[in-house]
Length: 476
Ligand code: GLU
Image (tube, rainbow, N blue to C red; front, side, top):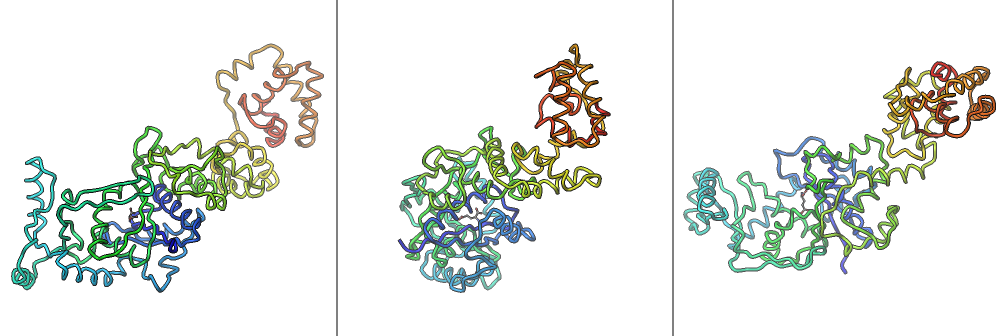
């Protein structure tokens, strides 16, 4: 096989979306599995939709995920540069000249209004709208006359008649399209800028791209691209069209869907770990052999097999993401998790009365169960609130006989301590058991409810120690 070269080619029209990140990820895994190059190219020809900082934001978020391109606008290989389409207009122009000369393309002077009218006429007649080829056979003189008048024009491809465009898709197998279903489409817009379907061919060819993994929505673009390759006598890359990502209602993930955070930056902001995201996204439409689901980046590169990419839609399972992320958090050192949580704690609470040691001990209590950094804010609420509220179940529980006495005994024990530590609280609980004669659930539950307000929570003695003497006494 010639050297594997793949590319991720976003338009800088927004920030890195989960779908785009997954496309980048599978291209990256494939490239690295085959010791190939992963190229970042910017498809910025839709100038009205480009946003400032779009390119930088894409690259930054990819870098956060651990996906670093071998080549990009910032890291160009002179053999293939430039990497932004708007800097490649000369390259496209040369190819367009050639296609015009060969008679494979022609200038079209139809106005947008005319095209719109024809479109409506065809739709009304129940036909699929297609360019009517009005300008396909203008004479050289007619073209020159129109040009001399400065009439704006687009350049269209002359779609060959009676052709079948077939290819072996790495994911979908044999796919074919008939040329009769494709109208003469626009290669170059009136402003001289090429369309996506045209520029992508020239770029993939000149950048020696060998394989393309991209979204399913591009499947129907492929015959258009293949016809250009064929006209120019170029070999097309091998394509693989990846499955859709759907939400839990099995609907296609759309950028407006609020049930799921759609942008990689949001996960970063909520305190998800990049290697966990990398792992989770690798399972969106791909599966390894066997049951294992937690893999390091190196393992994924080594086992990645494009034959195991799925044809059926892949559900974005939020519970699975939090599970994966929790698995990675558990593996991190306590110091790392404290670093992860501290910014969220600082934003939500006043930590000025607490030592670093206290914050560390607080995070330690939740280390095992934490699903993502920001979750800590909700989990530790009871340590910062002045009053606690009991739900119905907890307050019913507290009505039971003997509980008042247990609490009173425990309060006295705590009062006698100078400072609360996990050990001293444990000793107080033991002593309360003896003196009040309560044990098991009738001992722990009243203490837990009275101090934390809840029937569930992490280690009781640690929680009480962290609350501190003053808060515990007032709650009791
Ligand atoms: N700019 C295109 C997109 O973001 C790239 C499509 C392709 O990979 O060919 O969808």
